[in-house]
Length: 226
Ligand code: C5P
Image (cartoon, rainbow, N blue to C red; front, side, top):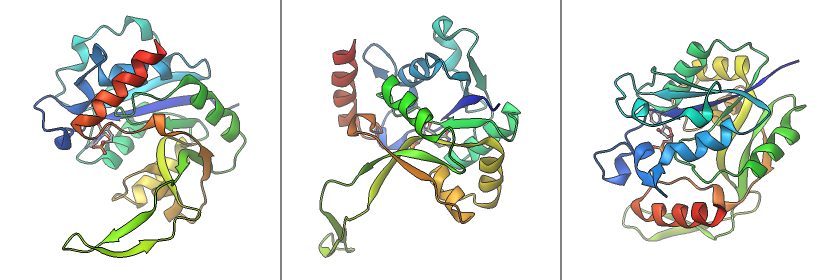
């Protein structure tokens, strides 16, 4: 039987946040941002170990108290220049079996709920490829030109916004990322192998904190759940 693991790339600098402190350590509802997703993943009974991929010179992670995740959380100081490189390095260092499932989740998606996480595992555990959490696109999509004028309207039928976790077999994912290094998510690398990951319906609460104004919304959601 294969086991389930989580891998959280957290070696980014979060330049769009205009802050000295890397995004994953910004204060969010009284905790560093990364605390929330790691706590949810560590609390999931299906998940054996949660690997967190940090920058080799990360000085912040060890300053926080992780005792509530004891025995399940494993920091790996092997982050790379891109997200894909951090995930790839993390997979190498974690020494998972090729058949193990790995759920890659952004440190910057603090509002992942336990409910979505367990639903995703239940829906994908017998899937031959794996898949991702995603939301059908609700807004009308405009393609802009260089002058920031609308060039045309994109049809939104069958369009989904990709989120994380993205859940694949560790061996397949490592192979896919070796062959395709310029991707912004794991599913793109799997697609490049000619495979079709499954889309598991999610909701917009699992958004990625990218800009300063996203912090306020994430705090509202997290405080409401307390
Ligand atoms: O910058 P962005 O929000 O797209 O980053 C998504 C996730 O990838 C974050 O958790 C970030 O820390 C991580 N990342 C990484 N290594 C990099 C760049 C981003 O682990 N070189």
